[in-house]
Amino acid sequence: MTRAAPKPAVVWTARAVTAVVSLALAEGVLWIGGYPSWGRQQVSSLGATSEYQPDPELGWTNRAGAFEMSAPDGSQFRYTNWSAGRRATALEIPAAKDPAVSDARARLAFIGDSYVYGYGLGDAETFAWRVQQRHPELEVSNYGTPGYGTYQSFLMMQRVFSGAAVPASVVYLFNGFHELRNTADPSWIRIPKKSADGGFFPFAVLAGGSIAGRRTDGDVIWSISDHLRTAAMVEEYYERAEAWTRVRNKRAVTQAILVKMNQLARSAGAKFTVVLFDDFQRPDREAYDIFLSSAGIAFIDCDHAELNQKGYRQPDGHPNAKLSELISRWVDPVSTVARNSARPQISSP
Image 1: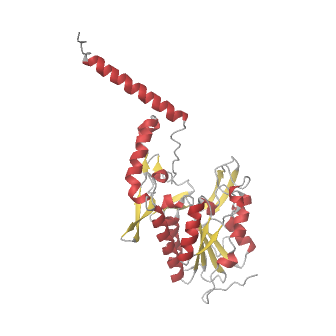
Image 2: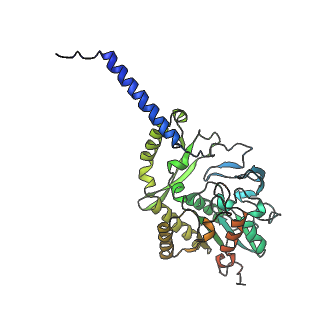
């Protein structure tokens, strides 16, 4: 006896129920797993009251002024930004608003991200401030800017060297996650909405073996992804596929940028030093040790036990005041300031 085929309405109903149940199960599994744990960048918020301002070359930079913010531990901290994107390194601004060409002191510039800037720390707790305090014979500038990677630090370095007050030495604090920032990894450029003030993400690619600058407004999160975790997963896979060709070269791109930074400093008679700091797996740290040595780039490897010990970090992972003090000693300014006849020489103590 042949069983009658089910009616099309029954088949489609069964398929719909199966799809809904499968989607609900997938949503539940993703919810239990805490997916997605996306970070959302702040480049879309660069209004007049923000501590950052849009920049036509850098994407964004520190806005001059005094600000107050809640630190990751909930405490309030006050910070001061001088002109040209610098954070304060002393109570008084040296040579009025900008470094003076007539200043006889050798100039030491720190560049990098929020670790250099001293996010979550008061002005006097940043390692650049501590270095300036211990070495009044130097003029220390802190160009650290939250969110920067190697490429944006290079762009900042170009701007610094294009001015009249060229530093004798530049120290770049390098964190492992800068590789992702340098190539606009989707995890870094994901934003809730596009900037209304002109902010963007600069990044670099290799074109014909050379560094080429690119920019993106960011990947705006799909509205449906805020409601369906499965949609967020589809979005993430799409973003990864779109970015694969550039992100897979993140190591080669970063190394090429470091070479350009060293060349820029040398062409100006200055010294460039890389500080290998946080977020490096052992093989990656060793690989950069070898690369920097072979490329003739001076570096300081901060592979110290304190980096992984409790009591040296803020809740979000940024260095606290205790670690900041250690950094100021690990990065010895006497050994990082270039010796050349064009600028004041610094004798070792």
